[in-house]
Length: 391
Ligand code: LMR
Image 1 (cartoon, rainbow, N blue to C red):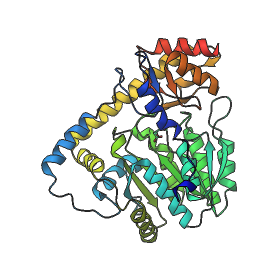
Image 2 (image 1 turned 45 degrees about the vertical axis):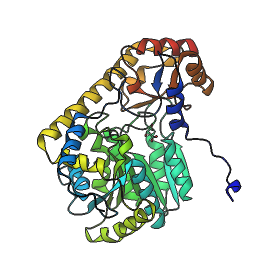
Image 3 (image 1 turned 90 degrees about the vertical axis):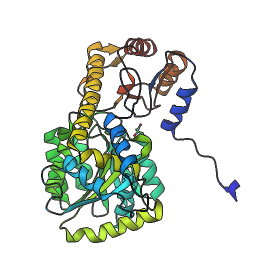
Image 4 (image 1 turned 90 degrees about the horizontal axis):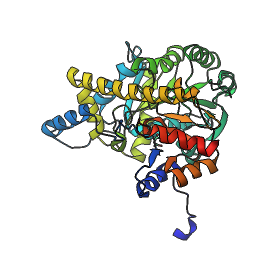
C-alpha cells in the first residue's frame, strides 16, 4: 500500500534549518526560518517565560486533560492585548487555544469551510503554509498582489478581492508584520478595508502571528481592531510563538467574533469538534506559562520589556540596512520603513543559491530574509556579498 505514496519535497523553509546546521563555515549567516535572534545570534528563552515555567513546575498539581478548547485562562488573558479595552466586544468575541499559529489558521480555515466557504482570497506572496493548508483542506485559493512595485501595500487589489469574494468566499489578511514582505497596510488603508468588509459582507480571516514585533503591541493590533469594529463576524488566528519566543512549544489561539454572544455557541461547538478530531486538545505547557505571565504584573512588565528590546533591535537592523542604500542592484532603503521579522529582496533563485554556496548566507528561495539574523558583526559581510552577487 505504501508504494502508492509519492515522495513529497520537504518544506522548503524548515529544510533550511537542517542545511544551515550542517554547514561547517564559521561565518555562516542564517536568514532563513522566522525566529528572533539577539545581537549574538542566539534565540534565548524569554526571562519571563523561564520564571513562569519555574512557577508552573512548582505549582502545577495535575496534568489531567483539559477540553479541546485548552487553557481558557490563557485564551482570556491574551484578549485585552489583542482586542483592547473591551476585549470581548460586549460578549461577541471568544476564543480557544490551538497548537501554535498554524493550528489556529488550520482551525479558522476548516471552520470557514464547514460554514460554506469555498474560496479564500489572499495577497501574494504570503507565508507558504497558508497555501499548503488551503490545498490540504481542498479550499480554492484566489490570489491578488499584496504589494505595489513601489513597495506600498496594494489597496486596490485587496479592496477588489473583498468586494468580489461573494457569499462563499473569505479574505485572509495578515494582521501586522506581513510575512514575507514586511509591508503592512497603513491606518487609512485598514479603514478602507474595514469599510469594504462591512459593505460587502465578505468574511474576514486575520492571521496575527507577530503582534509586538512591528511598531508596538497596541500599534500592531490597530488594523485588526479597525476591521472587527465594523464587521458582524470574523475569525482571528493568533500566535504566541514569536512574541513570547515559544516556537517549539506551539502556543496559539483562535478567536471568533459573532453577531451576539448567543451566536458563538454553534461555531465553537464546531471548532471544538474539529479540534477534537485533529489534535484532541492543544499542548498545555506554553499557554500555561503565558497565562502565568499575564496574571502577574511583574512578569508582564518583564515580558513587555523583552519584547521592546527585540523590536528595537530589529528596528536598528532595518535602519542600518536602509542607511546602506544599495547593495549591487538591490535598493535596501524600503526595508527601513517595513515591519517585523521579514523583508523580500528582489533576487533570483540562482542568486539565492550563490549567496548560500559561495558566501554561506542562507535565505528562503523566494528571496525572503529574516531581519533578526543580521547583527552589527555580520551586516557588512551580508551587504558586501549581496553587492557581489547582484552587482
Ligand atoms: C516562518 O515563516 O519562517 C515562520 O512562521 C516559521 C514557519 O512555521 O514557517
